[in-house]
Image 1 (cartoon, helix red, strand yellow):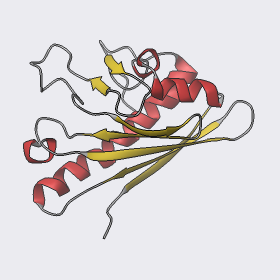
Image 2 (cartoon, rainbow, N blue to C red; image 1 turned 30 degrees about the horizontal axis):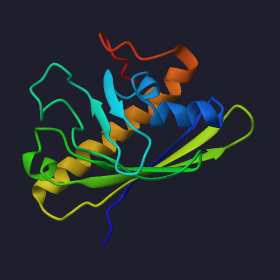
Image 3 (cartoon, rainbow, N blue to C red; image 1 turned 90 degrees about the vertical axis):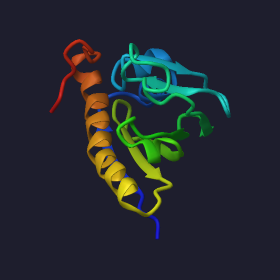
Image 4 (cartoon, rainbow, N blue to C red; image 1 turned 120 degrees about the vertical axis):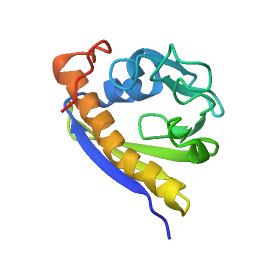
Amino acid sequence: MERAIESEIAVAAPLDAVWDAWTTPEGVVTFFGPKARISLAIGGPYEIYFMPEAPVGFQGSEGCTVLSFLPKRIFSFSWNAPPEFPEVRAERTWVVLRFDPLGEAVTRVRLSHLGWKEGEPWQKARDYFVAAWQLVLHRLARRFTHGPIDWSDPWVP
């Protein structure tokens, strides 16, 4: 039984801008994390550094990669759990984003986080991401209405 996390949000921005926010390091740092290494190519890095000053291996999504993309429609990447979930962090899940223009200046982003296994550590990590993805999506929307997130004092709804 698949236990995907599903979420979506309508963002007050055109499709091109929302696509770039997710698929470029310059875009990602405006809402997702303070530092990133991204190459929009199959197998390219999709690394978001939430704690760039932490030791290597504890900074964020090190080792995660772009799995697939259809420009301005679908983007998928492998994903890992935070260091507080070591058993889950040692493996990978994956995230699929779907982008739908809702007119000239609004884009719907639909997020699916898949690959969850059974067991208590996996359930705890999944519960964490149910909330974490809500925060990420709301920061994405806010980035377009209020400007980039200030990582010295990140906005929390």
